[in-house]
Length: 462
Image (cartoon, rainbow, N blue to C red; front, side, top):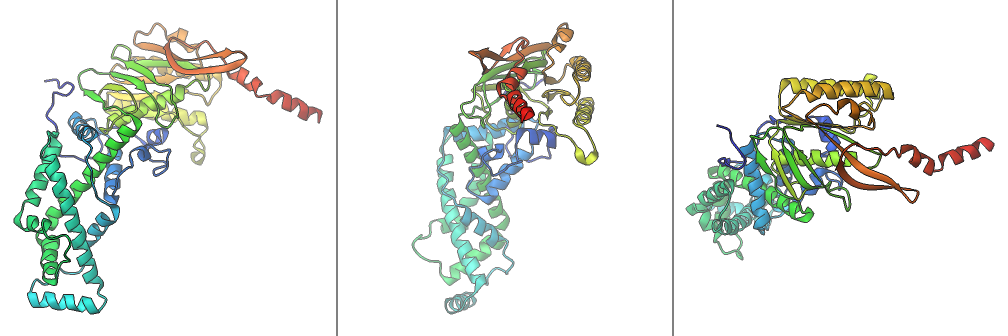
């Protein structure tokens, strides 16, 4: 039976599978996902509002494993959207969680629970420096503080209608927090220090009897940290949540698409359907083609990690991979020219198409590294070959508008261009996409407008 849209059972667990989604280093670099992680320019930085180191690692893990599994995607998206609609005060801090990880992995044996041994250990610490006792007592204080926070989270979530996976988290928290030994600790007097006997008993409890269960709970903390952080980013940047299909083939519909790294970005809408699965994109230099292709690719990528996307609305079929060629450079190390690097890239992409179907593929300025005649011939041959493939999406941008007349007979090609014009002697870019083929050639006008020839003439006279 064909599965469609949301009519699926959500995954009850947050899986982190090896990625079955085709994406490579060139595409990751094109989109700036991790290349500048931690800076204001990486995609990772848009979502990095986590409070913990473990949360940051889990965010990285999610972003490294896009998926073609609609159950994984809808489950994660629903978790993030839940915290978007139901903001949760999660009063955790990086230092405490980091110290808890250190404490739980501490090499010293759990303290003896014998009353006399515990008392002697405590008295010894009172009068002599003992790093082991410090790590244990501080670790216990941080664990108890965390448990109290999780008790508040549990009570708040258990009173709401949650997505399936959040419900499974609530059930795990309930099972752990309502254990008599744990519940008793949660409701200890917060103003009193632990006595020596409590330190020994709770150390044995957390680092021996309940170690694995506590580690599972801490993993939940990191997971919640990510959901809350991504929900916060979605609200800050006004991102939307994608809707998924599996029965529409080559289908993507996005309204209000923009790139979040561009200030005051002009928004565009795009519709790609099975009958028109190849887009031929033209427009003058600086008209907005590459920015549009990056924004579209980014939406496809984010949708396939279950994250919100920079748009007003997005509906998409689930794809098996994303391959882009936007910022391809010369491969000097292998002695490749730019043109040969392009040839190799097209060949690699063709091989991926042969190996699997349902891919989303972008070529920006195809074969720009060679002369116009070779670029025309190679582009035309590539487009003709791609047009025969119906189970993937292809977007190809080019300056060689003459190709349009040679491919206009192909039934599955849509022609789009970015508006540019000369107004009062100056180039004007609207950054809006329109149906048709560009007729503007502003490159030489911009060249002349920079006064380069005048400078060179002065140099010649000098």
